[in-house]
Length: 242
Length: 388
Image 1 (cartoon, each protein chain N blue to C red):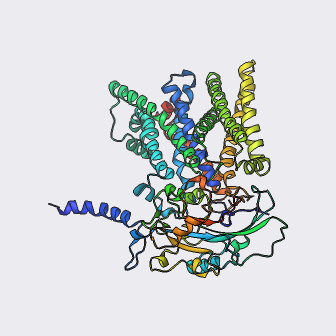
Image 2 (tube, rainbow over the protein chains, first blue to last red):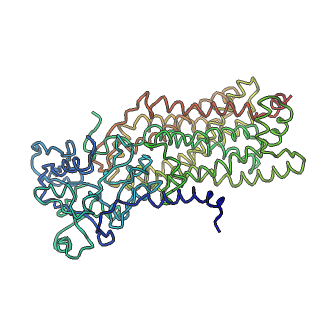
Image 3 (cartoon, chains in turn green, yellow):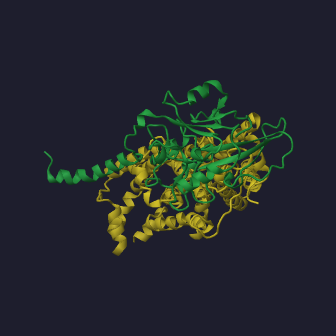
């Protein structure tokens, strides 16, 4: 039998336990079953024109502070055989597009970047309190009500996708527009890409065209040697891209 | 121009400031000072006895300050306790919190208390006023100082020190592990990192105790026990040689392997880190002390010159180890993870993570040490006098 004294002792413990349970619970949408999805993204390098629509859309949708980026676009210039030393620029994260290239010869292309929502993500591994976590549908999120702002995750991300929000003083990154995709919408960046270079993909959905695309195209992830299980797939990714 | 070449847009701002340089530096001093103290207790190196208690108090003073730079650095410091309440077990940083607590509670505090219990009980009886109150609290209700009880204290203290040695290795090795496991950063990601951190910690800890001991003798107008400082300097030399050997092994390995990050790291050592790495860390902070201490071992050097040499070597060692921490923490953030560009670090004078705060955090352990030495005198003869 639980006495009043025992109850008084149990309450603080229960409060702590409940806080632990709540940490890492993403927002839910009616009718959405997280276990039926496994989200990722397809980037078609051949289609990206570097217009910066995606960066602007992301910044507007997610209130990204100026000077920080949940997504950005890089422009590569690879001269002849200089695979290891490409010239790269990303003025303002490519938010307002790019000035005309002055590079002569070689090849030029754009590479959109964002969080790779890695399966074995180094950022979630190092978070001291589990404020950054995996959702059951394969999205890496940050609980800003729990994050300490220690910035270990920012150091651990090999892709430079994280930053410390100057207002909340917590880590921030691409959420794959979780508030949208759980309502059946696509991400803001994909929605606003004029060429379809970015496509949200659901790897658990057998009807998703990604399966056919992966079978028939030369697709790669960034920094595969780090074995992070990145889920942003790049079509026709040049070997010079870092 | 802060940025040279290309950096990912979020990388331009450095995330870990000078406070994160102070953190491994201070933690290293703790581990090193404790290991020096254990020489007398466990390995019965009688020559270093005059530094035994001083080393313990030094370790405690720095240990109390060790978490402060981390706390000040946090974006949301009010949430820091979450690291203990809901730790993420795969995070080296979270686990460090427990290693720290273990080291503070189960090793340092316990050992200091056991070692001083006899004096604490005597002082609680002989002093008056607020001092009496403090000593009474410090007895923790245990006022039995019979021969049997003291024998038990001694035995338990020995066991605590024995446990303390691997714990000291664990404490600072773990700091190295925090950096060494970041696979995204080739400057940090190395299995040698924890080992290098342990040995550099021993070097800095021995040097700080040597300096504090010599300074205290000067302040107290007492003669320096040359047998003691000669022995401590010898240990400093031996650990320095191992530490330098490990660091060179790491460097030679990087040069030989020359992977994709090598061009970036090589560029940094020749430019942005040249002064802090080559001049301060390697030349002044390592080679000069090693050569000086080595020469003292070979040639007969007069006592006065030896004293001066030890003081200079101690200071250079501390500067060199601080430079090493700087090169690891700040150096590891100066290049892009794309290996295509470099940024710079601007150290503010007055800000939450600025120069003044860092300097304050480096001075604070000495203030704590001064209070501790007053409260728990490391020299028995003076303690007896103050007891009267």
